[in-house]
Length: 341
Image (cartoon, rainbow, N blue to C red; front, top):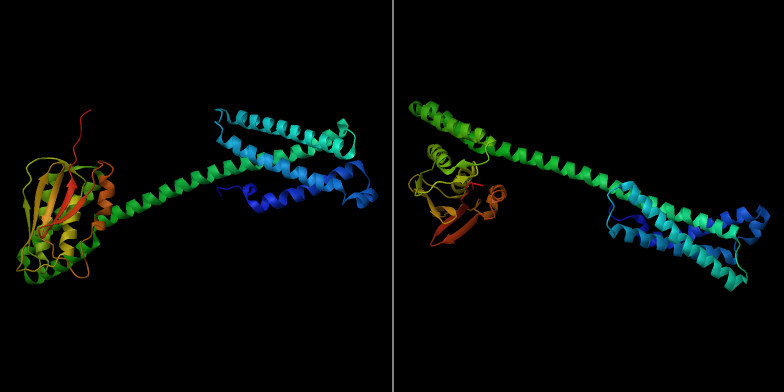
């Protein structure tokens, strides 16, 4: 769609031959009757019309490229009118010079005004068709581009809504929690109330945070503790969150929860081995540190954090980093602050 067909080699090769033959046919029909047309069709003038058609069409194509690169006027109609007038004027000049040279050099006499008018009229129509094709193509391309852009925005919105819905519902955590709840109801009824409170607190925060752009990290840590309590109810989980942060700053909602969940789901855990997740801070970053013991089937990869990194890129140029040092894995997340104007 972006490249107009008049610029394609096959069209540039065949179109002038066809249009030149049609122009020659029209000229013969104007100047002669049908018997003379049958006798004179394959004459020298046919090749002159085809050659002149090549020149006019190639010149018109170059003019279209030239006008496309030129600065546009504010009034669209005036811009189109100037383009048409200049193109027709130059076309008349080329056709008049070419026909005059042919008549004088080959036929030995000068063309009259009627013949020049006839040739110029026909070739001006060819030039005008080229211009109209170009203008219609440009506006059609513009309209289709705008439609595609709107469709892309709608698609992106749907995808973002689906991601938010998926993160908000978190079906894996929900189903695991319901399974544990069923077991607690049958075996340890005294723990069900606490378990339901943890689950309700987490999902209340997840659903309410969809309307927030940023939250205080302290709020996120409080919910992260609830998530840790909830995970510790699940089989073979013994997780401890150690908070060593001292300063206050903002973060993207659910980002810490998401990272902790990915750590838990990609680490081999045991009720006898404690998984310590330590929160520390550095200049410009807060750090989530733990001893990696990745599962064979599900390993922690930086690509897991791509969606969170995309959201963080709205607020800061700093990137989320993953470092492996001294048998420890460190996830560096940018600190966010609101700058006063």
